[in-house]
Amino acid sequence: MNNDIRQSIAATAPRVDDAWFDAGGFQTYKHPTPISYETATDNGTVQTLEGPVDYTVGHKIITGPKGEKYPVSPIKFAAYYDDNGDGTATPKKIMKVARLADHDGVVRASWGDLNYTKGNDYIVKHGPGDYGVIKSDIFAKTYDKSKEGN
Image (cartoon, rainbow, N blue to C red):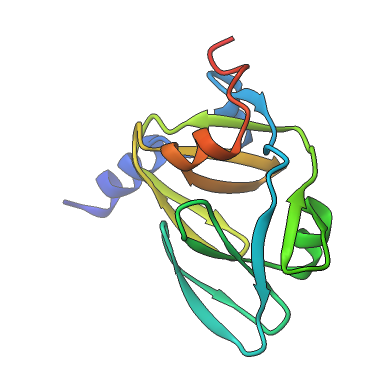
């Protein structure tokens, strides 16, 4: 395959950007169910459900509802969670936009590349150009879905 054809395919392939949420995106927020976390004392990599993600000292390593782990920077942690002071934190009610993936791909997040698959993952827009990937079953347990499809 020549380079012009590859560039044409890449230019027309579906991708997640802010405009992608306009068709099929819905308002949502995390349920206020406490999560557990640890504070990283060394730099490292954690194997998330979407692939390996690096973290640095001070990051919060959150344990999700299925035992999955993922790192969050101290700044984002403070913005998105109320620390309960006992190794748990409660998500703040922050409205976001989500959409079920309609194609396979990779989201380039500030903390690493996150793989997603059509029909199996929700993409959550935390802010302009800031996205996360959440498995459908975990999304159903942790996010409000009452506005999906409206």
